[in-house]
Length: 232
Image (cartoon, rainbow, N blue to C red; front, side, top):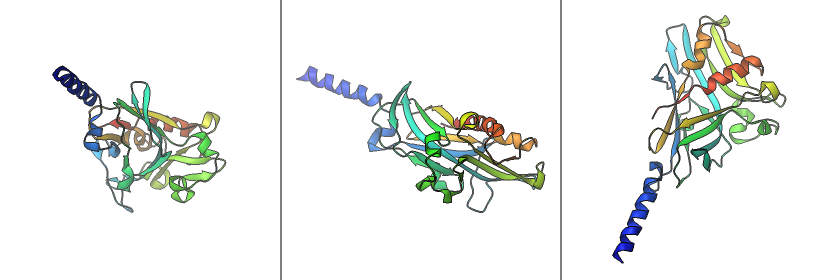
């Protein structure tokens, strides 16, 4: 009995060590977004700016769709979110944390889409986070806005910038895939949204307004995907 007993204990120990720490004690992992600007964490309540630099620059709104979340072990998908998409709003702290169901498997990276896929876009106005009342829907011809970033910039006409990035058809498709390695076995996977990556384009006065699908939206959407970085 004793050799079998020690073999069983060893087998259980190996299995436990291959499971991500987020599954210990029955806990489920969570994806946490932290908007930052040049490394400084942003926070704000409704009606207040997330970041202000004198009277020359501010970040007043950050909203985006996070869809088709998957956890991967290498190239293999080991878990897929049952909720199709989540609307993340920097002014609503509850939306910055997405609870994931218990995995029970080892995973090494997280993957999600920044934006809404073409099939959902041509399905018409939907409910939940996709409800047009959320302010992220143009029209059936143009579909959903994948990301909104708005604020004040003294170098822009009218001192306002509005980046509404969307478009799903052909060369105007703007959905982006983001893949983040899991750096540590923590219960929470914390991903920074480094807004300076895209807002440097605004601060130099070259891009202040994108309100329709097109080439500019595609270029800025590709840059927007690079905003997402692992924080731990």
